[in-house]
Image (cartoon, rainbow, N blue to C red; front, side):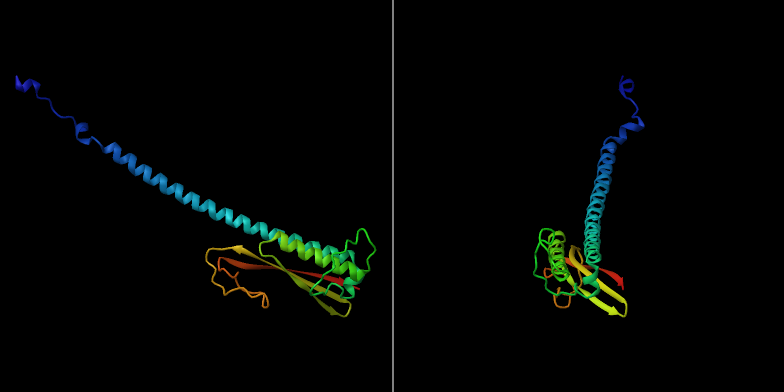
Length: 181
């Protein structure tokens, strides 16, 4: 009778718990893939923000170039070569001379750069006159977050380097506008 009650073990009976190990390994692989995806997403967002700052710098430089074009006579005379404009006169409501308008344009433009870009700085336009050609170089700088900033501390006098905390890198956008007599 004992021989009848004795059953042969099937091949599946020895594999109990194997599916649990498969599930744990699958969960580990999926979690690693999700961590990698989140890191990639974070990197993409950081790069997107950096491109937004570069686009803003392009728009701000174009704004000043258009202001110079609107006040062409003063631009040809070197009127936009002002290191520290202090005039916030609204030339749309009161009469302004060309020099007053240049000072007002530069003041408002510098305020826009500071308000728009992180640690934004608008360097004074550099005017170079060669005969009938007048060229202005417009430079804007800002700090963008980068994890591995290897540059030295930023110096406002030299306009190079990273920000003081070392958590970002100073970027520059330079544009030129040439006027002909």
